[in-house]
Length: 276
Ligand SMILES: NC(=O)c1ccc[n+]([C@@H]2O[C@H](COP(=O)([O-])OP(=O)(O)OC[C@H]3O[C@@H](n4cnc5c(N)ncnc54)[C@H](OP(=O)(O)O)[C@@H]3O)[C@@H](O)[C@H]2O)c1
Image (cartoon, protein in one colour):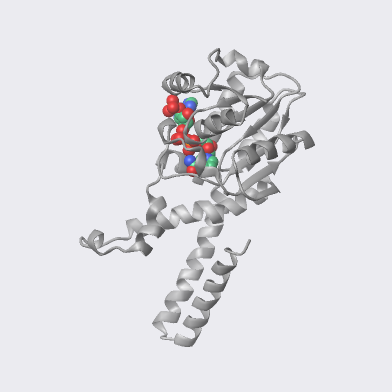
């Protein structure tokens, strides 16, 4: 396929490199020029790259933060052509998909997706197509989705060696992500912020480092994603606070039997995640 990628941050650039390796022709846009120049030099962006090439491609992948995806489409509407498929990789869907469904020209289908992979670092230089291996791939259908979009997205997922592919609608996606991705980042940063001791660094083990790895957060991206999914995220924070309160009470009451039951239940739930 001829593919146009909007944004060569960590996700866009990793897609570009991996999809080029699988025989696709990649064109791209990036706000700053260096990633485009580097991509051409490294051979994964076509040498005749230009923003006008968007019109000649089969698939457009929007790989900016949600509000910049919308800005880009609004600004370059005339470049989109009937018959094209549009997708995006954003971390939240309801608000952005609604906006894009309204503004994309007629004759263009649009199905979103979310690669469930990332790193603590961001930007073009952090690209690494290997991070997608065996990661979950969520396809998000909407009002402008056609069956052919899913075929294209499944091809991309297979090319980049993703693992399980799930298809959901935007509302379910945002609820799932509020729990599996956003709440986990909130917990990691809150854990770091609750540190009161100056010797902590010398006393950490694997458990603390594992739990706080994602506190090395891209604050620009995550603050945007949290606010775009505010209602779902606040709901999940409330559920979590309730559970914390419950464990605290069991500890205060020295109710060892209930505490053990609670811990065992959580262990079984977590072990179940390892069964494919
Ligand atoms: N990182 C993850 O873990 C992860 C995982 C799954 C999905 N996603 C989604 O992937 C998308 C991209 O995230 P990323 O992590 O790849 O981002 P990133 O590495 O931080 O890169 C940001 C990209 O956005 C561009 N950008 C930033 N501000 C801009 C502005 N004001 N106008 C135009 N372009 C601007 C940057 O251009 P410059 O190069 O010029 O700065 C760069 O291309 C997001 O929607 C995110 O939700 C991320």
